[in-house]
Amino acid sequence: MQIALTGATGMVGSQVARLLAPRHDLRCLTRSPERAAHLRLPGLMVEADLGDHAALTRALAGAESVLAVTFDPLSPVHDERLLTAARQAGVRHVVKLSALAVTDPQAQDVITQWQRECEERVRASGMSWTLLRPRAFMSNSLAWAGTVRQEGVVRTLHGSSVNSCVDPADVARAAARALTHPQCAGRAYALTGPAPVSARRQTEELAAVLGRPLRHEELTEAQALDAWSSRFPRPLAQALLDSARRQAQGAKGEVREGVREATGREPGTFRAWARRHVSSFASGPAAGGSAAETSA
Ligand SMILES: NC(=O)c1ccc[n+]([C@@H]2O[C@H](COP(=O)([O-])OP(=O)(O)OC[C@H]3O[C@@H](n4cnc5c(N)ncnc54)[C@H](OP(=O)(O)O)[C@@H]3O)[C@@H](O)[C@H]2O)c1
Image (cartoon, rainbow, N blue to C red; front, top):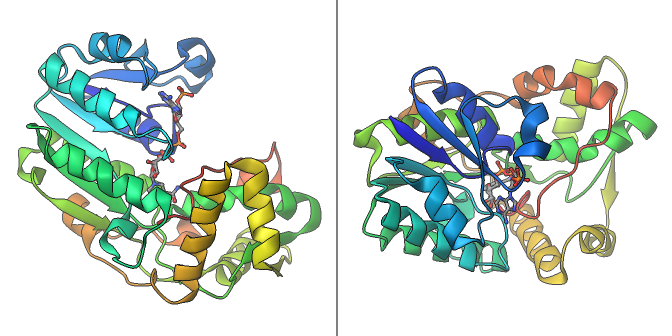
């Protein structure tokens, strides 16, 4: 089967590529095949920016299904261009990476509103679809790697509040299945981990895996907003703050069945994720994080 992946060099897309490569003909979209070469992704690397309709149409030609991963809540045109190009290229099925916050009527921040609008476009696209709605990725904790290595500290806002965060490997498994199994069409999967976990608890888990003490330090809302504003445009920083407040009110702790339904496997724990990523917290350069990191 011919399958095209947007976000192919990212956290979820790269794992989807590795899962599908043995049995399928893959096109991995990236803005820079040269820069992406070090990832040694399977399949054909194809240059395409989500803002470039002509490049997208070329990249998607012949694909039967597409993984739709878009990134910029302030550029909704990316989703529109991707779907238009997919339809014109004859794509039959779209698997959209969305976020679980879309199901919470209290979530009115710009990131969640953008994901809701993206979902509406997918539903109205005329192609068949599957919606993947993950809670926060466990990998968001890679943003703590620098301070863990240098100071033995994790700093977050609302550190005792819980999130039923999900291993991105489970999200990738769900995506791989949805891209290749017609019975996933028309379904929305709520993807969470097996238990709600707080940043304080994650700090303890990381300490256990690293075998050295770590401590959690609470940020004030002003400190957290300053930190986000130094990395993201102000509306996105504000959305992350709104999202953290909803988490503090208990909106993100529920465990859902989507990983089991979509993959037939039990969802992975934070401890298991931390064991696989221990080297990021023990040595090497600090990892970044995306604007959408805590929006789910
Ligand atoms: N992090 C979370 O907790 C969380 C939770 C729920 C939902 N989500 C959703 O997951 C999605 C992000 O997935 P991810 O974490 O796997 O992605 P990611 O690791 O942030 O991937 C970044 C990718 O963006 C690509 N990219 C950025 N701008 C682009 C553009 N203009 N055109 C083409 N490609 C572009 C980059 O590819 P190149 O540099 O190779 O071009 C790169 O592969 C978002 O939609 C987010 O809302 C995230």
